Image (cartoon, rainbow, N blue to C red; front, side):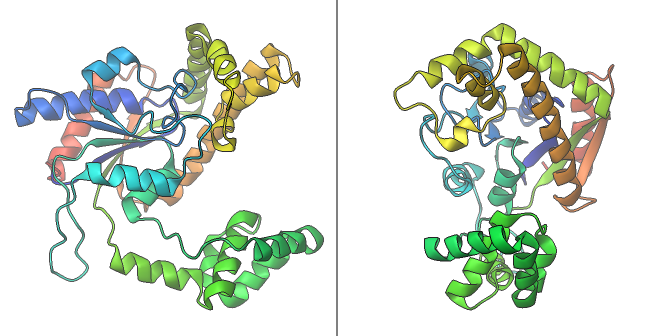
Length: 331
C-alpha cells in the first residue's frame, strides 16, 4: 500500500471484522500468500492477559492474522502514548520524506490500523510532542489554585499567555491546562508554538481513513450483546485472576472499562449484577465520547464513512472499503 489504512468507529461498531476482511482482500489483490498485518491501536489491548474485557482477537484469529501491538506490557506496568508510538512506528515502514516543501513521508506494506484509542492513533499519525519533564512543584501550586480559585481561572490565565492553546483546551480539562501553563513557565514559550515547531520538524504520516457509522440505538444493542458475550467467555474469572496476581494492576490498566467495575465488585463496593450493568453503561458512555472525538479528528472531510445498519454484513462493508481504496489510489 502507498499509505496506511486506518479503520475508525465507536467501540463495538465492527472495526476489527472489517480490518480482517480487508487484510485478506488486499492481500489477495496483491498476490500475497497471507493477509496483511493488522495493528491494534488500543491503550488496553497492549496489556498481557487482559484479553476478554478488551475484545482482543482470539488465539485462533491471531493464528490466521498477523496482529501487531498486542501484549506489549504486563498489567502492573504503566504504558503511555509515547511508549506506544516508539513501539509502533517501526512497523509502519516509513520511506524517507521527499525533498519537496511540506511533503509527508509515505509508507509501503504498512499494516491496517484499527483505531481503538484515538489519542494513541493521533500520537502515532501526527507525532507526540512531549516537551520538558514535569515539575511537581509547579503542578502542585497550580492544582491548589484550581482547588481554591477554580479551573476557569487557570484557563483564563492560559488564554493570556497562549490563546491558541486555550482555544483548543476545554475550560474543565485541568490536566491539559496545567501542562500548558507548566510548559510556558519552564520554557518561556507557549506550548502551541513549541508544538507547531515540532510538527514542522517531524512531519506526520499520510493515511487513508475509513470509518464505520452505526445508529446509536443499534450500537447500544451491539454493546450490550458484546458485554453479555464477554461474561459468557469468562470475563469475571479473567479479572479475578489478574487482580490476585502479586503485582496486580497499574492505575492505567485498572481504569479499563470492564476491569474497573469488576475490581469495585471484588472490593465489596457493589454487587456483581451492578458491576455488569455499569460495564454496559460505561461502554455506552465511551462510545458517546468516541463519537465526539471523531467529529473533531481526523479533520472533517478526511474520513470515508461507511453507514451500516442491522442487515449490513462485513462482506458489504469490505466491498465498500475496497471501492474507497481504489478510488483514492491508496494501493
